Amino acid sequence: MREGSLEAPTRHPLDWKNPEFYDAAQVEKELGRVFDICHGCRRCVNLCTAFPTLFDLVDASSTMEVDGVAKQDYWKVVDQCYLCDMCYMTKCPYVPPHPWNVDFPHLMLRAKAIKFRKGIRFRDRLLSSTDALGKLAAIPVVAQTVNAVNKNAVARAALQSVLGVHKDRELPPYTSERFRSNFAESRSFPVKDGKNAPGKVAIFSTCYVNYNEPGLGHDLLALLAHNEIPYVVVEKEACCGMPKLELGDLEAVDRLKQINIPVLARVAKEGYAILAPVPSCTLMFKQELPLMYPGDADTLAVRDAMFDPFEYFVLRRKDGLLKTDFKTPLGKISYHIPCHSRVQNMGQKTREMLEAIPGTAVSTVERCAGHDGTWGVKTEYFANSMKIGRPVFRQMAEPQPDYVASDCPIAARHIRQGMGDEAKNAIKEHPLSLLRKAYGI
Ligand code: SF4
Ligand code: SF4
Image (tube, rainbow, N blue to C red; front, top):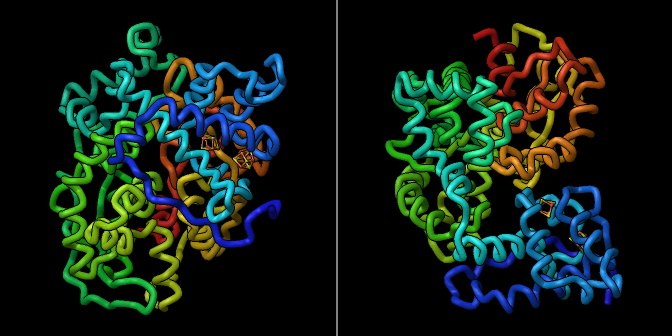
């Protein structure tokens, strides 16, 4: 048996409609098999807290092997995984097509799906309902009240004891000026398709941009307009489903897919590039939904039309169709590439684009920051999320940057919080906002 696979990694479709997918005994058997491989390997020990949890259980057991670990303790490992995919992508030599067939994140997902069916906390259901939560919290007056509560120490202590949202976690503000109700219509530029990317864009705005940081959506539209790329904002959208997937609620993912895919497939077939400004949402359409619906032509059409915004801009630049009339140098940027961007296998497109701006130096940090969508918000995981992020906070602060940026706005907030006073003058800014600033538009 070879030590590791030499072939390109592949991923098996998720067999989530098969009743056996939810068979707890089968999953425990598979957890035992994979944990045993991981125990013999231990490459992933410093990636997250799932692996140290497993190895501590093994080392404390009577046999010092996986067979000495109580099966109910397997689920402690599952709880520590937030499905960033980094073990699969960056470390594991035993992923398919290797015969050992280790896909640690998807095994965790299967286990989470079983846990979900057994019942989960109201808090977890609420936090993963980003669309419903956003709709409610973005109502005028409600938005101001929610934002005030989020900043009030007494209210946060109450929120922690009632809902399990850690009192020290900085939460994103809500806005009543939703992106989807306030965006600027596109001017009528001629469509210039390039060799590498289509010349017209459809925007899937995402819950986060719609309800929390609409400015990112406006920045993206301004960049498209400056480059004379016509755009539409898709007529209807729901959450991409990633927060529900991370919870193992696959039926909810299915419901959201039924809303999004027909709308997105229509624009994909009309030749639009679809851009989503949050990496986890892009990944959902590029990878997770195609693995859940491998034979669904519409899902695959959406996958093929979906671009990360910087992936799109770099391809347009390659086609000679992106302006480079930058006016403002940006100085030093500490840039964090989120796990869900790395998993898209597209290279470091944001870094490439920012480095093309004269007078701009980018130092890139390629490590998990440890927040994940909702994981690092929860009381029981907050400390671990700050611990996982510590090397990132340190590396981001080290160059004394002018700006701190991550494609994931949630990771960026977490990183800025973790950096504290280490880089006092560094401004947190999204790469899209930085690119807009560089163009002076
Ligand atoms: S997917 Fe991420 S969080 Fe889960 S075990 Fe792998 S590295 Fe850890
Ligand atoms: S996921 Fe793969 S690389 Fe990581 S510890 Fe397990 S076997 Fe080793």
